[in-house]
Image 1 (cartoon, rainbow, N blue to C red):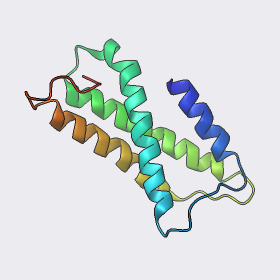
Image 2: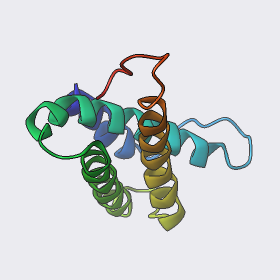
Image 3: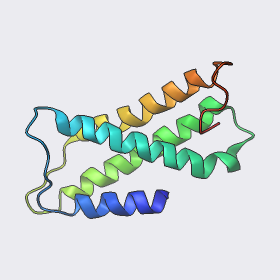
Length: 119
């Protein structure tokens, strides 16, 4: 699933124009959602191999991975006609991954909730 999500992202990033609603700042929110989904998928893929590490460290690896991929994605867009490299997009990307990580770390400590998808 991670490969499919990244492939879709690369395809979308390769387009000269991307339809985005005309709401100011919506693109940053979409970046955050996109990378929160990537973080979830990446965690589901790699956490079984990292069981010995504490949960916070596993999530740190995921967030750093999303951050680095966000840098690659923006650098790639610099070479696409009519697109640009926006450092604030990288901030939004990393923020989405980080917010998901913090939320799931907080939720996993709630005994009434049980397991939360990624543990």
